[in-house]
Amino acid sequence: MVDIEVLLDGEELILYALVVNKKLLIRDFISGLEDSDRKQVVNLIKQRADRLNIHNQQHFRSLGDEIFELKTRNGIRILCFWHGERKLVLTHGFVKPHSKVLKQEKEKAMQWLKELREKRR
Image (cartoon, rainbow, N blue to C red):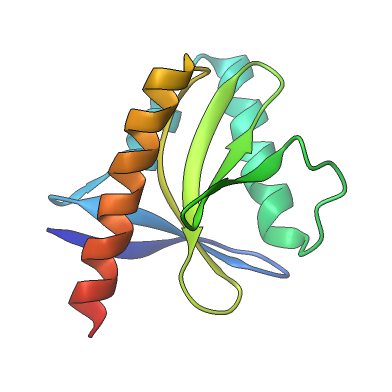
């Protein structure tokens, strides 16, 4: 069962956390990071919420199939998708993967996107 919960209401975007089986995967992921990594991720999320235009495409890019990734300098990835105008849903995070792992993580995000859209009909 999937749902969304507001994570951050920024100046430009509202960021949501995906809730899967009553767990906020992104919040659990961020909580488990080391302090320096956690600060980078929190800053990146705040920047994303406050700025509509991305100046550095290396920090936010499309993976195709409506899935995007936020990236830090230390190789942390957070997958996300758009859910209406100015609404971005953060699904989950992981450390820089091999291409096979990235494909698996993207497939998870695509499945959650599909489930959320079916639920909202």
